[in-house]
Image (cartoon, rainbow, N blue to C red; front, side, top):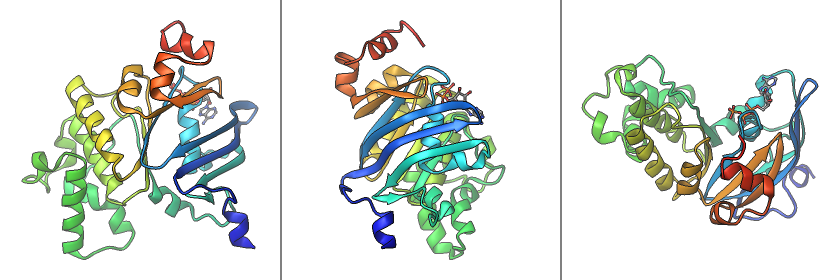
Length: 263
Ligand SMILES: Nc1ncnc2c1ncn2[C@@H]1O[C@H](COP(=O)(O)OP(=O)(O)OP(=O)(O)O)[C@@H](O)[C@H]1O
């Protein structure tokens, strides 16, 4: 019975995140209004929309980061790999391992590069040096940072450039082998070359992960994503393949936004 309750009946194996009539209020303020969408596995989804439209709040529902705000009241459902993550029995720390998150400002810890990557593994109780070494190498390679740091692994992460720090933070998330990686404006604090490196990295990550990118940069959404969700004022206005969204949007609001007439 419990399994039945927790597992969505019409779950498709190729859907990573299934959002059903999701609404969220902060006190009296409605931040998300009745959002439904399905995010396919091993694809890149861009979330766009004007400042304050609810992009960060939406992805914060996918790993229950919004739980940290006592004012936030959620209704509706979010299924990840067919499981309802708002079910009372959901293990929230495990969810946040499965659904990794990278923020706008690179936020490495003031410890070595190596210790940054293994941080979450140590919390999980992994102490075997060989296992940790292997995961450090693999994660830094996946994050396209290994060649630059392999000889300075025990130097402070704070000595790295902003772009390197952001790739380190991505490596730290990848070390936990998340199914889903969410990046909230990952390049807005970076120079154009670092931005390009992160975009190439995002593109490669989809071979093994489902990637969600919140971005203010419409060219970036068009360059990297398979599908795009356009939010305005807490509502999902349009959700379609990125090609369609940027060439023949269905909604006037979308067209106005992508042609720079508002937002
Ligand atoms: N902790 C909070 N308490 C109250 N209201 C909040 C809180 N966080 C966000 N909001 C409000 O919810 C709405 C959505 O905010 P959110 O940060 O999700 O938007 P966004 O689209 O990510 O914006 P931006 O592009 O500027 O980062 C905004 O009106 C914001 O003021």
